[in-house]
Amino acid sequence: MNEFSDKNILITGGTGSFGNELLQLLKDSDVREIRIFSRDELKQEQMRVRLNNPKIKFHIGDVRDRSSVDQVMEGVNLVFHAAALKQVPSCEFFPMQAVMTNVIGSHNIIESAIVHGVSSLVCLSTDKAVFPVNAMGMSKGMMEKVATAAARRLGENSTIISSVRYGNVMYSRGSVIPLFIDQIKRGQSLTITDPQMTRFLLSLRSAIDLVLFAFNNANQGDIFIRKAPACTVGDLAQALINLFSSNVPIQVIGTRHAEKTYETLATSGEIATSDNMGDYLRVRMDDRDLNYAKYFTEGRPEEAVIDDYTSHNTERLTVTQVENLLLTLPEIRNEINR
Ligand SMILES: O=c1ccn([C@@H]2O[C@H](COP(=O)(O)OP(=O)(O)O[C@H]3O[C@H](CO)[C@H](O)[C@H](O)[C@H]3O)[C@@H](O)[C@H]2O)c(=O)[nH]1
Image (cartoon, rainbow, N blue to C red; front, top):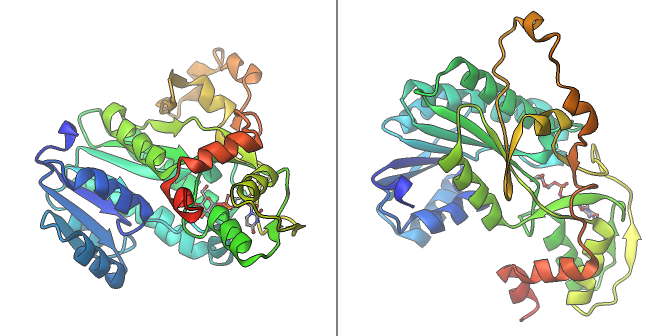
């Protein structure tokens, strides 16, 4: 945590689960100040009372409002940009709200960070930004493009702008795992969209590790990806039924608005230009200019033989492996009193 020594750190959307988990790591380091920037005064007040830490400062504002962004950015060294609209259904029904927060809001954060001489900014993205089919993923994909375009015009001596992509965070608020647990506890049938649908599985801690890895390793315009295993929704449901020794039935309800059968963390083109860094992939920025003619004869033949990296072709966990992975989460152990 030496990299945070005496630094002013800004977490946008800092009252969410990502911000709270990151604070657990940062609050006892010798960071100078941590600024939480978000819209919700109630959540900020609850955090202020709970954490009771003078190093943590709370700022009401909105990424859509550049003046509030500029105010909080004054004197900041490092930015974690987590503020977003990230629920797939709500973005689907209100796509312009996703544009305003995820695209224009991210643009505000990026431009303000550059103007204020921030040394490093990490933008949080999602697997749904790759080959997007829903408004949430499309707007996050645009955020990545805005970040990359800004990075392309800056040199290495300016603000380092990077992005991270990860898949579903297990037990995150509003996601399927707490929903299935609730259904099991009520003795209701488990509502499965499509038993064969797959998702990458990641713990919140692994997501934080990915962001810290990006901070420590980013070159201008990099996108970092955390490799992860996946499972089918049918196996996830079965694993939870087993862990809770339940016998609730399964009800197949069909896919919801703008859902994919599987998610993609990296395209073949990205993999062709990435560095394999153990648990992580670094996708390098395409820093060619618009004068494509000189690249015409070279091309990238390797793209043709590389597969996209998807939740269908990554390591597939068995039901027992999913059970063991779920048991690594304290929340799940609490739920089943183990
Ligand atoms: O009643 C349900 C609800 C969901 N699912 C399935 O469970 C999987 C996971 O669903 P979640 O709602 O937990 O997650 P999503 O993949 O739809 O999206 C989640 O992960 C995203 C990041 O990739 C965003 O954070 C988003 O807000 C969050 O809901 C999907 O295959 C979905 O079809 C069911 O089978 N039954």
